[in-house]
Amino acid sequence: MPTVSSPNPHHIFLHPIHHSRRAFLLLTLAAPFVLHRRPLAAGARGLFRMPPARLANRYFLVRAGESEYESAGVVRTNPVAKTAMDSGLSPEGARQAARAALELKMIGACDDSCWIWPSITQRSYQAAEIIASVNGVDRSHIVPEYSFLDARGLGAFEGRSLGSIAEVYESDGISPNIKPPPIDDGTPNESVEDVFVRVTQLMSILETQYSGDTVIIVSPDSDNLTVLQAGLVGLDLRRYCLAVNIIAFVYSAFQILAYLLISASSAAASRNDVWVSRFGGDEFTHMINASVAMAFLAFIAIAVSSIISAYNLFSWNI
Image: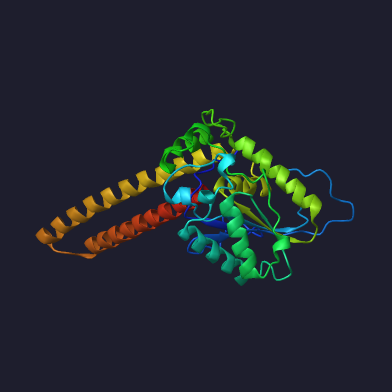
């Protein structure tokens, strides 16, 4: 099961899927992700399962912009408040949604018409209206989803700071079935597995209701999209946590290697300088200087690769 991360209010995802799940077309605050349809034989569609053998439609996954609560750094996942005005887009969230809408227009998402499926959550529906306006989509093609796209319920973390929910995602790394602590105010406490069930039900509806269409899914948080994306590209959700741990182990090994390499190179450079100052330089000392320079370049390459790897890992989890 994938380890999902906090509902980052500063990112909007428009994920395209015609190639690698990490091949994001990065924007300032958006990364397009498209699921392309493949033709189906008549009557070939049945019970929808993850991962699907093929899709009947093309999909864009969009993370709604920052909400008023998120701008204040407060967790708000109780579905009772999802249609409240203070669950709507903040000024920055509206700008993020507009940028996402323009990117969709630039890549021609709705050139042949499209359907927009937002969560009924205020910020998602507002983002959907912005997308529709920019892309010339009639409001009758906005179809609100009342439950399957709700933000992941975080239980006892409701009302706490956004930073506090790092604990939830640490638990996700242990098991996809671990739920956040419960609370008695009606806020659900959902595990990653619970989210997976919801988004699978959503895809079942869409794949049954449409054929050969473009559907833009607008989610109020990133958890829905991360889990949906993992299911659609065929990740074994039970083994995902192991994969993340392996990546973390390799990343740590690279850090150790880089440290040893730069330490050894620094020591060699110092000794070589002492030798040259006492006895003068020759072909051997020049070779040492060249080797040290190569070691420093290798260190820089490892450092840059580590930063890129860390960025890819964390961006997958936001």
